[in-house]
Length: 159
Image (cartoon, rainbow, N blue to C red):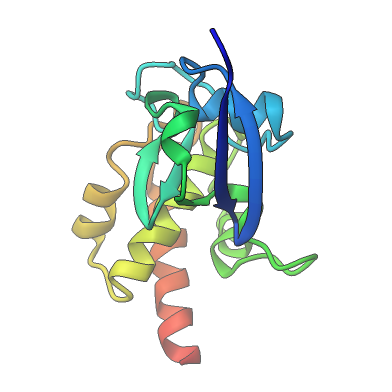
């Protein structure tokens, strides 16, 4: 099999890579590009640990081929902070103790950021529904949802 050349943008940076035609985007991100924030929890799209955005849409990167990134804008957890300044969601997750082992956290943060971009004033039910594809085995979900809703409130107040 010959490798596929892909030109894309990851976290706003133009990126090129070569990958096997059957390599998942998750494998490319982690193994080829060194972006190890996205985690493989299940490999079947059921847990959300590998969540990224493609052209603004939340996806499980274990279900997308790396070659499908051609021409797309990919967003990963590595693109959330601005240098040393954490994204408000990241800061609230720390303040609300909304993380423990960390396997699910990157995917939840990417999905939560997407939620707030689509809906800056979500209800608790909307937040729970939006994050339903992201499973956590350590924290339960209450602290996660509280952190997301608190971030939404702070971001609305700041604008």
